[in-house]
Length: 252
Image (tube, rainbow, N blue to C red):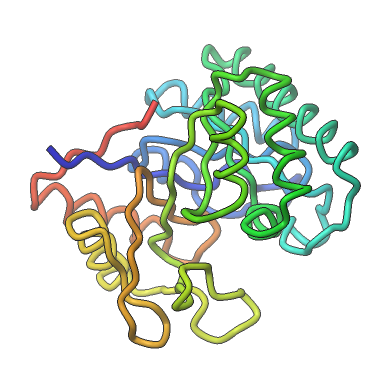
């Protein structure tokens, strides 16, 4: 039977600034990629998000990123691999402490934003992230884009890899994500997003930005929590998957 996990980037509010509707998203997703304070999130926000996730049985993942609050972690940072390893260890450890205080714990790791996209091809930084996860807990699965050197390095290091696809992001013909600086990089229509997900889950394919069809098999699908209408998108996805009797369950 086809089963799929639905994840979302959450815990990204900071101080007086609220981003997304985490509580509503947690009613719809099965895994929560919770910010770790480097690209977004403050301690009270992260603790509240972890408590809300734990109360709903939603799995908690550490969404690690560059130390770039001003850029929301969506700008490449040419950080030395040794420093990146230490920073990722720090982020996982901080979020795991908050998650444990909430009665749960970090059960997987997903890089965020520019780091996620950089380690599709940047092998040194990919290895640095893998080294960090192994140092903390080599049983933690890692999420990444299919064909990325990050997943290649993770598999070589003995980590469990979880292939991810994106409901609300456009793809290039080579299977990478269209940069957010380009028009059409984000898909906003909930019905279109839901149809894309159903196609991806049932056929393992998705339409690229140029109209070509690419392979995009995945274990988990992301709906960005900061995307406008994110809750409507996640609800549309759940409704369509339910209508087609496709179970939505956590991968771990």
